Image 1: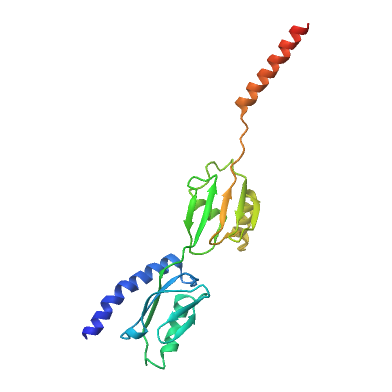
Image 2 (image 1 turned 135 degrees about the vertical axis):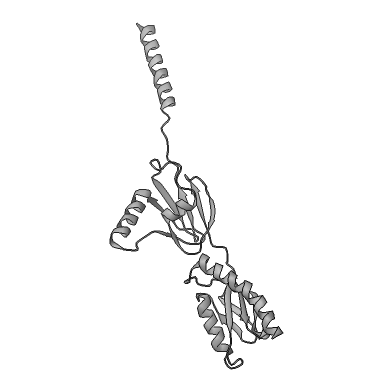
Length: 219
């Protein structure tokens, strides 16, 4: 009984954290390389594991079972994999799995926005959502061009007008054709080039003055 109470004391806070994680990442979040996983098996310390990192090859080293491919699985799917593997050793394995810490999944939103910087994302997001994360555009009517730089170095030049049209069409017919940003991508909102009318007026006045002076001097 004391042992059961001990496990409940340990598990309840972690279950609450797992629920918070579910709100943040969604039920469809898939484990990625670099994530840190925590696993609890009720009354079986030998099969519990704290802060296990997902290796670059997508595998996780799990006590007694060795290497398990976890990249691409949801936490619930990993729980089932572990539960099935434990059946030969534990009659009714009660398994809890949650992502203790997500690998940094960030995008950069730079340029003509109110709050340029790096932003955490939990799934691919569209251009307008990324702009909203960065506080919106400085002046909506002035912004025209954007540039997307992928994490692998590829880049694309687009216009905000095209993005608006794609989103408008999506809302009309339920299509999902959107330009998405993924971890490591950079969105650059090109700062519009403003015409310095004051400078142009000054130059025009100087040219006019020179012309008039030349006219009167040669008359």
